[in-house]
Image (cartoon, each protein chain N blue to C red):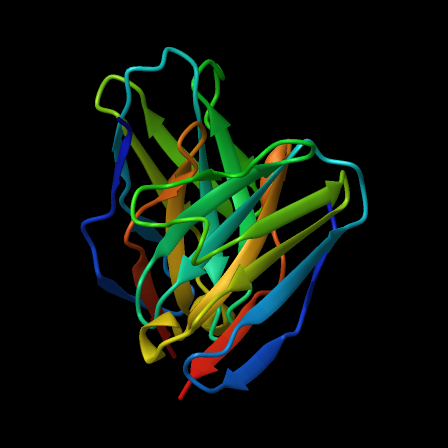
Length: 110
Length: 111
């Protein structure tokens, strides 16, 4: 069975600084994908970024980038130049079982 | 990206009653997914709904409690039956169209 692990229940970052949110996974599937989502207090799930297991380069989407280390089975989300609006819950998820990690609550301090 | 709507957006229900949540997608999709997010928790997959076949339920979820309909490729319903306060959650439907996209959720409070 697949497993997604987010070990940081909460993270704080100063506005305009970069922050890394950790995600490790375990799967026996040779082909898989990893997603990151943002969930603000409104409750909606906002898709941020996707990384395929065979992608040659790390995914980037604006201020979001994914530090994908396949051998370590990690897919950490990097948010650069944090903004107050980035304060939210962040979830890592994997294709296949469609399961989600426990989430990390990010708080951006002014 | 798929645009997904859900009805109702929120409801307050009495224990023992049932609520049906509707999910509408703006494109035809093979699989639709229903998740539950209990307060302060992550998302838990309830079931996968394919058009024309019975939904596939995850461990801990049963059809009698969470019956699902999937009459066509753009619509699905999830019913929360015989509700108890423990069913108070956000219920989200989701589709995969490249990435996985979610509806806005239905906030359910059971008194």
